[in-house]
Length: 156
Image 1 (cartoon, rainbow, N blue to C red):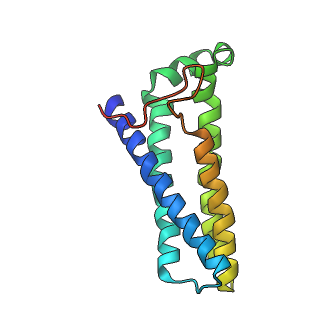
Image 2: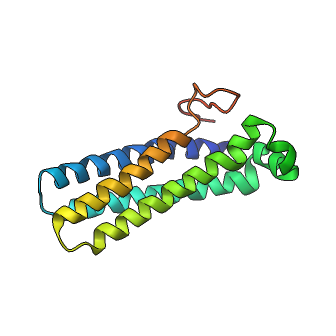
Image 3: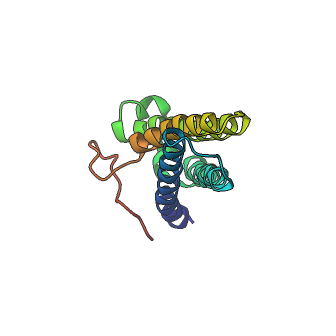
């Protein structure tokens, strides 16, 4: 079960990242191009937030039930704070990613509440952009130091 959820979490990260980048680029194009807010813009925000929710769910399954790393960290949280890899997964990664999910949802809500199309695009661009930036900062890229790095994609 652990390997399956970890593989899904690895794959869904790319879907979330691509969906976020597409939503951000479209929002900036709408903002600076002074375009109408169309159903596609709304759908891209919905897809982005939905994939982020799925990714969060997979991550929480790993965090609380399946990951040997977080199990070890949660058993002795004080000791985990002195181990950079355990600290990364027990605190830094999950905290930053939860904030990224919240920002994506705030952006979708704020864009939906705006009356003018340019304001919708502006709000989506800013909030989704912040969300994607945090995702990029918190993904355990292979080049990360101190053992926190993970493969580009993990299957099996």
